[in-house]
Length: 156
Image (cartoon, rainbow, N blue to C red; front, side, top):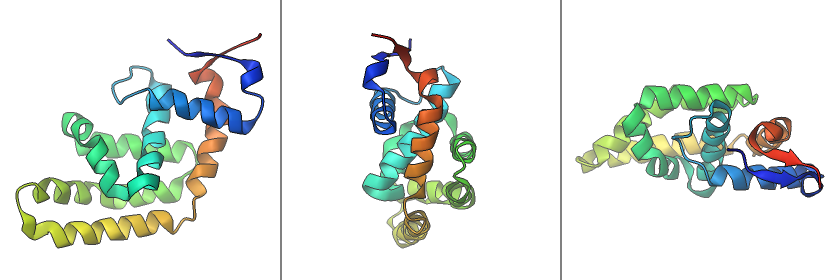
């Protein structure tokens, strides 16, 4: 069931950004609503990368990735990034995420891969941050476009 919000509380783009962020922060990967999942995965990607980079993303999503497999996770993430026009971000993940995941898993049992793991993190984080925050603008635009699919906007 979609959360309800009054239209008067969603007058500007900042209000919509905040409302969608709050709504998505209460979701998880297991949602059955395709639009919510699509928005959630790209929102979670953005949130984790902004707070702690790819290492934080993998630590946060590792149980889900183990459940569905890295290929599905990567494909879902890349698809969602492409839908919002974040093609440069999608290219980073398409090219490197699977290898980073393998290193992440290997690191649990073999400390000798630690240097390779952190080099890959540095490469991917550098590419992400080198895009100068374009993702936030793309997400804001996307959230404004789809907010009525995620939130039941009522008059009053």
